[in-house]
Amino acid sequence: MIRVLIVDDEALIRSGIELILSAAPDIEVVGAVTGARAVGEAERLHPDIVLLDIRMPDVDGLTVLDRMLAKPSPPVVAMLTTFDNDEYVAAALHRGAAGFLLKDTAPDHLALQVRTLAARGVVLSPKVTSTVVDGYLAAARSRPADTGLVDSLTDRERAVLVHLADGLSNADIAARLYLGVGTVKDHVSAILAKLQVANRVQAALLAERAGLLDEGGQR
Image (cartoon, rainbow, N blue to C red):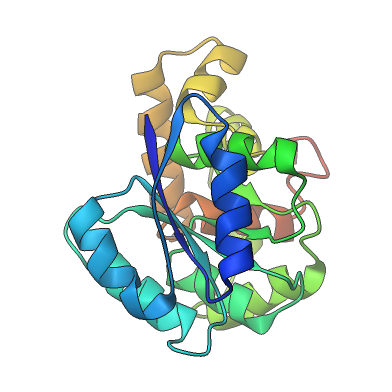
């Protein structure tokens, strides 16, 4: 079972997401709380996934994100937001969020996105705009040659990156490229190191900025 903690300041949002996810046979909602209780409940309940509201009146979502990711063996944290061009989203991605979901995500897609997060895939709303991507990259440390970093990848690493940016898990990438899961994991580690990024989301955004996705992985 995929254990999920929902963190949102609005009770209606919490209950709605819980109702949708609880209908999935492989997902268990272990808690649905406000931001003030989020870190304590995450420590107590040990969720696999945290869906975290990015803006809350009682505590800033970015502060909660930082505290959760600073813990040993932190959960995968994805941000919930009503905005697709919010500067907070860019900041969250820079700080290590595994992606973000708009609160108007179709119910039949929500469980699928949680499964993708559990498989360490990338989850970005289809409404991700250039504002979000550019905002993230502006917040990231300056790199003299982003495109050059992508060009340093081997053909195989570039192919893995394209599938990674599409949100596929290591197992899915392995199936697509006829590789072992362990081999894909090694490629992902090499990609993160070469691109000088901390996680898969940051790698995916850098690939998008460099035009790699538009070109189908060919440069």
